[in-house]
Figure 1 (cartoon, rainbow, N blue to C red):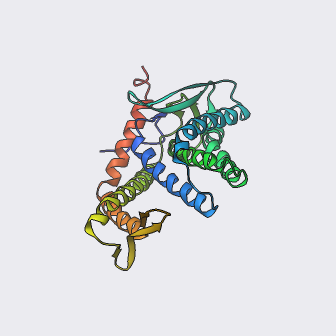
Figure 2: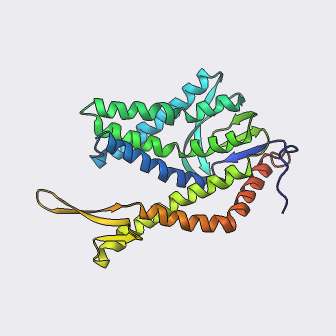
Length: 280
């Protein structure tokens, strides 16, 4: 099937529904990076009962960062709404009243990740009593930036143009995204999701097998770690580099066979959504 001609295309539309698998994969990656950042900063992720209020705080400050950045970059108005994948509500979103150049929209889209994340991490290190709550907020803000990152990558690959941010979808007046960018996004998201799935599988299977350490060609895949508490011993799983190496090989083989077809399918879907007939 023929690939779309970028020079003759008139625009495209990206919805949360269309890229939800890619958002999930990038969310896993941002979760891992945020966890590593907390560990490196010596900020413990304790008091799990704070997770619920932290989600509410993260949503509020995340969307406020979008709105403030858009306002600073020239947007005259914005509105808070619900982000949906089909009929499923997956979060909140900020829609901007006026079209924005791609370059300005990218700054507004990535504002929570680039500004809030370092701020929340610094506050978690400095503010002792509130450190657990701020650590959870930092974590959820990072995970919630997965959609922003996926949308930004797709829009940036299209080049110069105009973005109409409608909250749960974008209408972009620019040539369609580049095929290699969609293929790379698909591969990275699939690799991250597969690594997470394998880690969960090992978590449930390693203990019943009675093994304490699993290696692949000399690389650590996973090992059980025993932590002595006051009244009990806590068993946890540490995942080694063998997991991402194993899943990277599997995903590379899969993408070599199906990657181009999957990227072309997504490209056609985005272009069809943005076609004049599709907009009604």
